[in-house]
Image (cartoon, rainbow, N blue to C red):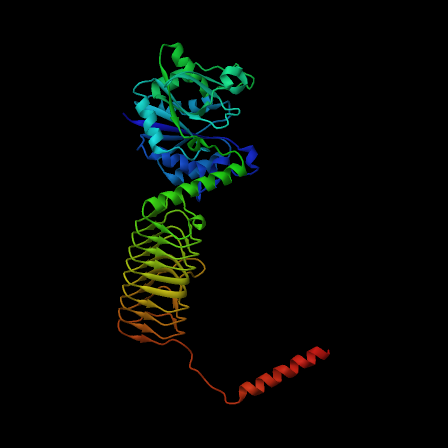
Length: 449
């Protein structure tokens, strides 16, 4: 049966003390919303609907940036969680299959937990995700017998006996689309806040003779983000888990506590990651590659046997083939380096194609931007680019060609040619001594003034 998701992302997040919508604050280089959407997408859903509110345009842009297929609906005014879910009714109420409600500020729900919820739906009409809380505080309590859920009681309405219960409500809920939207029409707002609460659905289902069930997950999965302190705690929790998973998957981390992963970082077995490496989004590192210390990587692909760093920066569109070597203080953006290319140090390669086994000397720059447009540099196989060569794009260097150190290359270099493009050196005997004496005289005169 197909499954669809409703992700609630309308909240302002007042306690974040920020103009940015709460769900757009980042953990592991990605908005909180993207974490929830990643969990949803793991089940190959038929539809994903994001309910927006505060900063709706920004939240919708973030959702579409993650997956163009995401659909967004606006909750305005915001009258509670049941009201928020009902905003998706025009899109989903006629869908077959189940609907799961997630929260854009709860980033750590695991795909395995969502699978467990769907399995429980075979036995219950409504399924709620709960957790055993170390400190239940003011969470809503799940009153249950085994996996059968009797009701959800808000803390303020709970008796002393009910408050002693440590099984708490995460807010995540699942039912068939037909039942969920039918029950939503029966929710009332006869409470102090005058809002419509999603937590009423299990009791409404039981009143119709239907069953409600509970699935229990680890409390860490239900961590919601409401403050900057909680955001920092979520970052720490994500990184601790990501580091442990990397180690268990056969990745060497020489100083794990100093490595920071992004939401979608992929690293192959037997890769080596040095200290103080920072991953942005979109990085894949294949097996047996090495990234040395103090590197910053984003939007790049590093193939088997390649070495990067230390102190290198790979940006969006950097593609390193097998056995490429990128050394210290090298920046690469939107460039393809074929097998065996060597870029030792102090170089910028942007918008470039570098052929296999070419050597790029220190201080080389591909001058790719004319102030309006970007242009591409193409270097052939086995080329040797001398130190401090400026390659003014668009320009190409042929196979087995060579550029002399200090050259400014503005025209194509044919295969097997040597290109020299620098001013002729002129030596003036004795002029250095005379010039220095004159400059010292001028300095002394200024000192007396």
